Image (cartoon, rainbow, N blue to C red; front, side, top):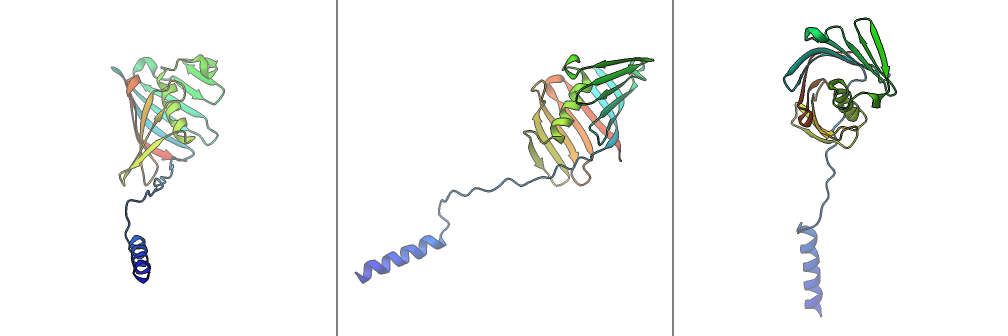
Length: 177
């Protein structure tokens, strides 16, 4: 009897100190979403064979603005995006459209959709390499995959890629408000 009790105590001690094959769940490291509430940036957009230079801005009230600088045919065009309306201004003409009245393939709409998905913290897969934060997700409207890369320490946008739309955007000279 004493021998059995001794074996049970030894086995219990052994089981307490050996890690064994326990199921341990670790929470995914939380990565802050560092995008500033308002900013302005130069945005070089490549969509297929078309290269566009623009200024991309986000305001605290949720309004986005895309002002085209080149190519010459788009120079002076601006697109303002709010949750309920898209306003396009070009050479003195202004048009207001509901968000679903503009094609899902429009460059500005894809850009805004990706940034909005990120800001709203939708279903995103985030990775950090210590200097850059990569956010992968799906566009709300089209369901296309996107990859948004930010500078982790400052929250500045670096690039956006939407492979299904053949869209790559590079951000530079970012000013936070």
